[in-house]
Length: 69
Image 1 (tube, rainbow, N blue to C red):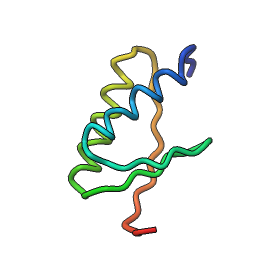
Image 2: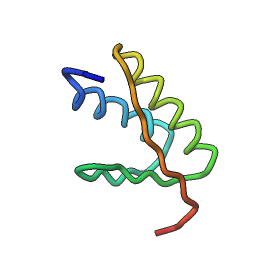
Image 3: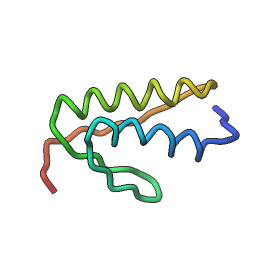
């Protein structure tokens, strides 16, 4: 799986989460997302769709937890 401008795709796709009112903690290898359950699921779908619109293959690994930390 190769994407020449992967940093651009990631940064642009994360905008889909903030557009859904979610808070982000962006780290070097992962991003922690918090917000209401429905907004999380809607945001993840929007993130995937936005990344896919850039073309090429997309792989998204998600871990879901109901922790508050």
